[in-house]
Picture 1 (cartoon, rainbow, N blue to C red):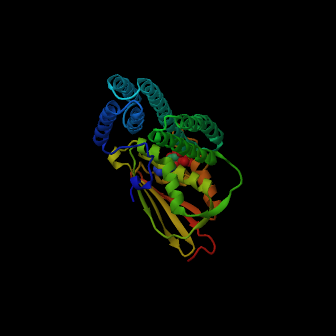
Picture 2: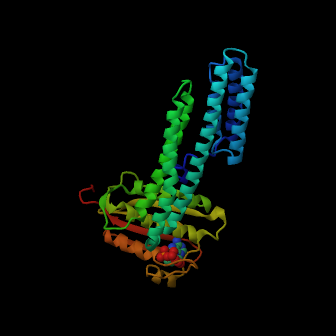
Picture 3: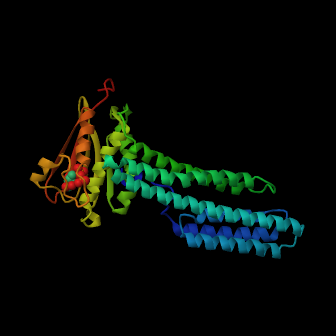
Amino acid sequence: MSRSDAGRPPLRQRNRPRLRAAAILFLLVSVFVADTITSFEIAMAVFYIVVIVLAVGYVSTRVVIALAGVCVFLTVLSLLMSQHGSFQTGLMNCTISIAAIATTTFLVLKTVAAQAAAFEAQAQMVRMARLTSLGALTASIAHEVNQPLAAIATSGDACRRWLDRDPPNIDKARQAVERIVYDANRASDVIKRVRSLARSGPPRMQVLDINATIGEAVMIAQDELDKNSVSLHLRLTEDLPAISGDKVQILQVLGNLIGNAIDAMRDQPSFKRELEIATMRDDQDRIAITVTDAGIGMKPAALDHLFEAFWTTKEDGMGIGLSISRSIVEAHGGQIAVSSAPRMGATFRISLPIRTGAGA
Ligand code: ADP
């Protein structure tokens, strides 16, 4: 499985921008024509909000705002060109449609901005998770980002109620609002995960599917991997028995190893930045996870100190990530080891006992 299989943010839309541009243009013209030839009683212009929703994520904020301006202009133009029905009703429908376009534009842009902030917070979290002493900072970042997200969800609900009023031809408007609410809640879920990672306390053991946990760790690190052009390959053995572990702590270990791998490959040309995470059955009672990078590797002398607290070769490093990782793995009854050579990358191998009775 490649990195792209591991779940990507839906707003990171990358495929077929031309097709999307054509769809937007087609919709724009269709709504304009339909709005102009139908009677004033039919608020066709409200469908311009679909154009806005389609454009968001594909074009810049400025273009979305410009597009909203075009929609408003076309709405007014249709009002002036239409010849059927009561002009007064048409004027009312025109006002409502313009308000719907403006509200939708505002909300979707706010959602996108909040999502960008959420992904930035994710990247920060990957770094912070390696430094548990800075967990409180992560919590405060999460707190700050969560508030606008909650506001978007509230505004989305309010907007839906507003659009539910007469005239009733606003189904598409409602769909757009539901999308806003869905996206806002989704971004909020990301933040909840950040919070849970920052939370410290006694380990909370639960039955863990290690492949699913790795999937989650990858999702958290995805933005950082993308930013550093790291290609990720997941080689996860299916049907592994479950382990018993504290998910937050295991995520912390994986986040730390992934973060270190990214750091180790920073100076490599991007085509060489390959990270592999694999799982396998170690022996009858254990499973193993390996994290292999193609980074700068380590000298034999470094291997002796790697897991010591405050041993670091990085300017901004604290040297506690691996020592914490080792404590966590050992508290789970497992072991962590490394094999590496200079310029040959590094492989970290974690071996964990399977849950008693989880099947041999
Ligand atoms: P920090 O990342 O803050 O330095 P860690 O305890 O996580 O703290 O790592 C300690 C040191 O181990 C790093 O400074 C680096 O020299 C080395 N190291 C860890 N992972 C790797 C890796 N994948 N490749 C090369 N060196 C690594």
